[in-house]
Length: 217
Image 1 (cartoon, rainbow, N blue to C red):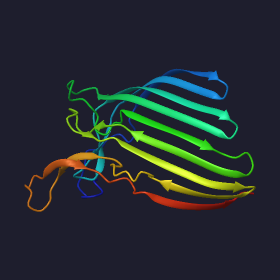
Image 2 (cartoon, rainbow, N blue to C red):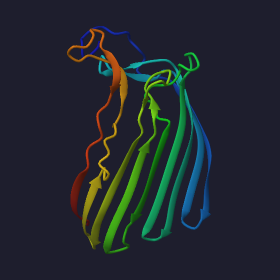
Image 3 (cartoon, rainbow, N blue to C red):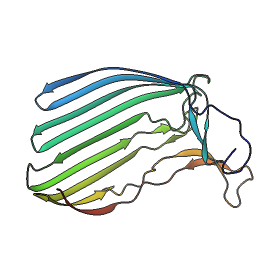
Image 4 (cartoon, rainbow, N blue to C red):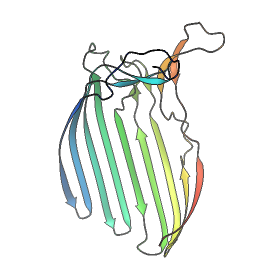
């Protein structure tokens, strides 16, 4: 039963079969630097897709993903750490025509990076992090794509023994990007009864400052 309308819906298996594999390597090219590179793949018996009219998800066709992930962690100094992760993926439905087999909402590029200074005992601490989601398809033919989203967060503060005070600035650049996007038909007053297909998205949270006081024991 559809919880929104109370109408009967076609029953489906609660769990979809999946298969996955990954191969990669771990290396330490220099002192304090750990890097991993992995190639992976995932096969799903059924893909869940968001349905705008119902405001819920529904099972769809079988799908497959292949991707490449590169992860790095570097500590050049005891107080300093740097990290960089990048992942690239190709997602397709198996049973649809080539060129019309993209999975709406499937991310193709994700990059995160950060640098942080943490005192060994007492002193200032700071961290800067960036998160980037690349463009991704919203329709099976890829003609409509969600724009990329990039967010920058900053944290600064002071540590003295067990006492710690910090200020976090989230979305430091006050980006107006979409948090997530969907493409479906909706209707405003004066528009056709069938609605108009368009992109729908909630925006990311605006720039905000958070203060934190903590005491460790």
